[in-house]
Length: 496
Picture 1 (cartoon, rainbow, N blue to C red):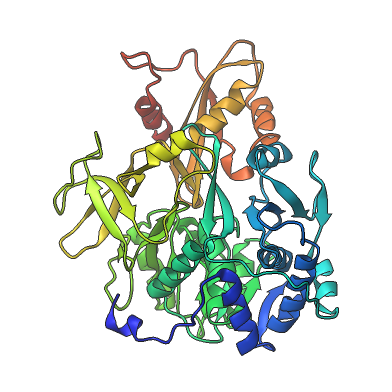
Picture 2: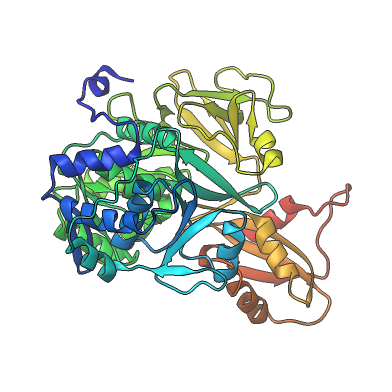
């Protein structure tokens, strides 16, 4: 850690709950969040949080599932579950009902908070209007014991090598470590105004929209949806100082807005980026238009952040930055993952630090594959240069990065194969100027079927960002000598 950052006054806390309570005590009348027509101060939010916690007295140590869009309701439900000592499970709101049921299978569910009905789950309805009512009510003291650092502070979900969802539980201690390392990478002041755009259920959106703003009692402006024109307006009208940013597609979409060319952002000062490697062209165009750099970082659900470009320790457009404090990043051979490679050589990235996962819940096979020798094996390919900058050049796995989300081909393939007409399927990624990548599906058929029919089938089972941009019918899938589908050949075809 640089001397500049290590000398900055840092609030002291051991749990996420303590972090929020510190903010309430220090700035009770400061705006906490603005979501549509709802605006809550920290004191008002605390009342609503205690109201939620009071309804969860029997939830201690059990899961409270959140299926909510980015909203004041999400924030209140999350911190309310923490106050009750529960384990919030954060499910992407874009998932269809069938996926929600699959993700939450096996959890000891005490309650489900959502603004929609979910078949098979007993839902407690919550939305911004309900939160506003709770915030206007009396203080509620349920006498609940606050969580400890070892208690679970969030359960996030990520695909595995099988394409099936994994439950990744993070303790309060690990979440605190993440917050402090994000703060190291993107130092903030008191009274910042944050504009997050990534889903709060995504590790990046969770840190930039839910946890880190609270560290110094910042104000969170929550857009109703991501629309480039709306984001440009909010950046100006709300005097935003920290833009939640995200993957390159977010910045590209904003720069494509017809309002962007004439807009000015005098208050904006921090523009983080992450979720996918940034093309140099995006860095150059954003800096030319705003005078501000995109400070790119790198992380994953299992451990984030890993590396960050910083004003204090150096920035290099196109690189993912340097390792965050107390974090070891190494490059090992791709074949075995055992041999440490010298500086400048390309191999698989492995990393360890105090903010890493301990494993996947009830999934020893996936844990053993990802967590080895005390390191998280990222599955990404990259190199470390002599100055310590990490550059990510490729991916070991066949993951497709769509708008910062990891999309696993097998899940889409299995969805297509569940249609009676489909006899074979292979999904690959194709570069896309807006989304980074999009899935392209190649199928063989046993009976005739139109692309529109197969697309409609996918829409009932997959989140929008997982939907194939194109479904191509082939007489046969290309095979390698081993008999496996030749994904490289299909990638080349998709690129053409």
